[in-house]
Length: 499
Figure 1 (tube, rainbow, N blue to C red):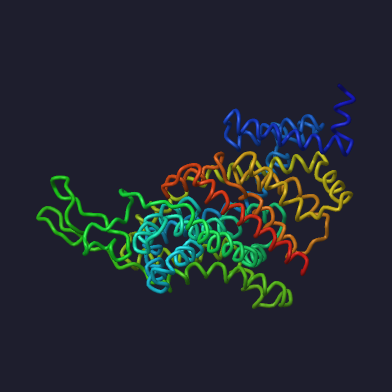
Figure 2: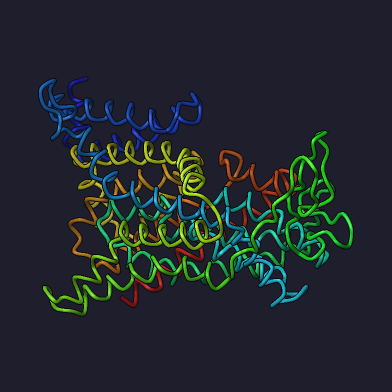
């Protein structure tokens, strides 16, 4: 027994075996025992640390001081980096969603592209709205608009849904402020500006192939009707839904029945007409502000001398937390206060939107702790040596590890934080440029979305909202995610060769 423990602790093959066993235990706890991922990550991390010979003091500290322990430093370092970014991004998306920005953008694009170009219009809507809005929220908001587009344009619902889903998925996987790229960037030590640049460079081609091309191909083969009871069905020629918009909620009368429309008045409670939706230009500007500020900071830090006033201003405003704070304040005023929304209502919207963020942050923090433990045990160095020996580039290893974890347990976040923890030491000692590390982040993110199937909650959301059987969802959504993953990684590999 002692010989086996020594082998696991000190031999390269033993350390790699320990890493493989830790991932297997993690998957067992999540998939078979249905343990919450962040609890499973903590349990696995502690077990691996103890088996690898990490002292209890190093692992958890002492009753008097624990600030230098692996547990606290693992959680604290990454959460200090990503918590404000994810929180602010979530609030920004919630304010934009409630303002009617999605409806305005979709209607403008549908008018611009016409019935035949409606699938592309839905794809662009998903692409733009996917930047500030989480994937599942994006589906909830945009599904009724997809139904309207499908009714107007005719043909299978799949033809309109796939481009939109590809846009939402690409931005969620590759671009800040979404948890995946933000977390990977924080763990691997790369600026958000580089992640935005490389994410767009690799993600746009992936969206075109997976959403526009594959959506048109599979939309002719898998025929799905819009559900009869789906939102957005036109009630009569004067209904806003028949014009391509989402029908406004009816006013409830004193007897509990629905009145005819939003402008109908009763003696007991007059209806107040909702303000017109915000302009597409305003929505695009608010989305672009943080991206441009962050990119400006990245360019300024590279091209301007240290200590220059302009450089300092660009770096300050382009710090992701500052840039997103400015964007949230801008959205709160332009989409909220100026349109009649009270500060109390904005506070309620922000509070509601932040509720799901807690679990994301717990998983990310626990994943960072797991990665810290693997680094302490020497697994990262052993993996780096093995990759060097077999000649596998770190970007390929990152993609394959992330993809394997994604297929096995379904969570993109778990796949990202685990992969980043495993390859972190290799990246840290490899002398890679910021552009190359950003491409590694793209590879990790691309691997984390491959082959969405029945162990992924997103699979069931797509099946439910777009009226598809399990078989049809596998043919459409699962293939779309795989194409998005492979093309995104291929683009990253091509750029890797050039940089």
